[in-house]
Amino acid sequence: MPELPEVETVRRVLSNEIVNTKIVDIDVYYNNIIEDDLNYFKNNVIGKTITSLSRLGKYLIINLEQGSIISHLRMEGKYFYLPNGSELNKHIHVVFKLDNGYILCYQDTRKFGRMVYKTVEEVYTTKPLIQIGVEPFSENDINIIDLHKKIVKKNLPIKAVLLDQSIVAGLGNIYVDEVLFASKIAPNKDASKLSIEDVKRIIEASDRILKLAIENKGTTIRSYTSSLGVIGGYQNFLCVHTKSVCPVCNSKLEKEKIGGRTSYYCKNCQE
DNA sequence: AAGTTCCCCTGTTAGC
DNA sequence: TGCTAACAGGGGAACT
Image 1 (cartoon, rainbow, N blue to C red):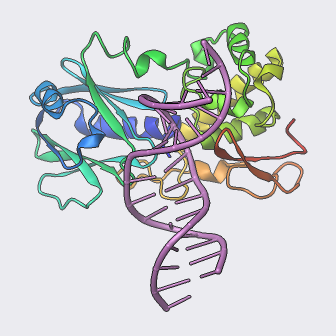
Image 2: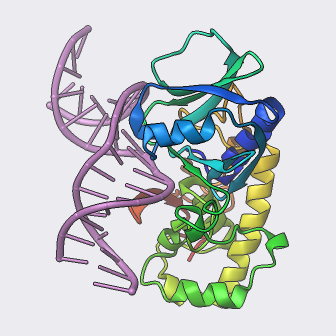
């Protein structure tokens, strides 16, 4: 499940491959991946050169000479860069033909991913990106007081609040569990009960964990690999998610649904 | 308005 | 062994 570090890994890998190529044609085998009217999408994308790749939260942004494609990989979305004529498996739903003899394939086993074209004016001023919150990195100079205010207003477990991409952008189920463990806060703690210190620790932990995860090309568990056979290494650093024993106190870890997500935490170390 | 539930999907695993 | 049911989950729509 691509979260911020995995999407960033995809962005970095693809940057070396598709920037400065022109999209000359698009084949779509499963329409629902494209949120736009298909003709609108094609008319606005075909013939354009890819100028750069950026990212906001878990969204990959493919910038064109005019406008951008915003792509969300959801659970299983992956991009493959292959020579034109390569055999396509049944889970490849969108194929961008490039002017350099290669194709950019979007594969998505569960068909949950979505992509949409936005004009330059629309990219950051319309959904989905307009509602995305700040990424929890120290260089973003986050106002802890304001963030704390936003968090304590919520009548939800803190984990559910951190999964809300309009509050903080980029954390998914895996990294929220890790961040809360590092912050010594239980995932089911009422968000309204968090102190300013708690919020500070959450941001510090997020910064450290996400950066280490990016360095390690993300986490590979279950079916997830970033793209074209890139295997992440952060699964070796996981403290609680999918684990059964606390690495700090050796207690048996709790595994329960919080905010609709399977959550791992240590009752002894987190409160 | 904010919180909850359902839905989209299919491969994998658990259970009988 | 072979089948079916449960499960995994990000985000948006519909609902309360």
